[in-house]
Length: 260
Image (cartoon, helix red, strand yellow):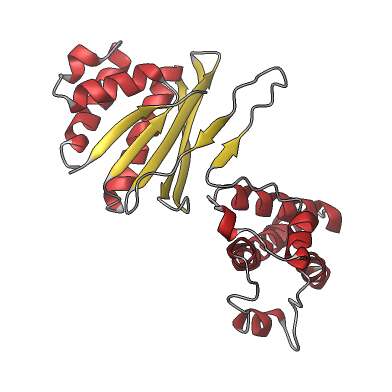
């Protein structure tokens, strides 16, 4: 099955992925920059990790859970993972393919790549607004966080992503906090993101979230307000105190509200 997956990749990329011997030998000899365009070279660089990860998961499901999935199901997952990973990057016009042959490879992968920014369109066909992810200034970083609860209160989860000024993901995180509110989940997403940024020394840092309430709270704390005066409820006060203490350690940090 693994060989069939690599052959599918070869067909899409118009490059031979599987050489003589086993796949380990092929990976050791994996070309670094086989294309002229930056987009396709990045695509080529992420393929081994995504394919190997999905083959590994399929193997574990077969061995430990006695579950067997068809080849096309695994291939569809690989294809989706590649599309999602490529969508995290920020591209300029100069990065895109300049030849028909390389352009056809993008078509083969069904990659819809915007220029200059990451375009995120909503699923609502009646919505005319289009949101864009904007890169932070050069040599700085951006944290995007979010959180929600099903029912408010209800099962609450959070997540976020840290990227550099080129849009390259540095850390993706997520988790759950049990039964709680939307604001608590949003706040935990912010807190966990700040911890990740601090531990990785990602500064200067821009923080972007779609909760106006949380962005306002964080901004007020950054300006010196006490957590107990900023918190809209007792549920948030303790975590806001943690955030206040952590913010004092950052040499440069700013907060931005973005639309949902």
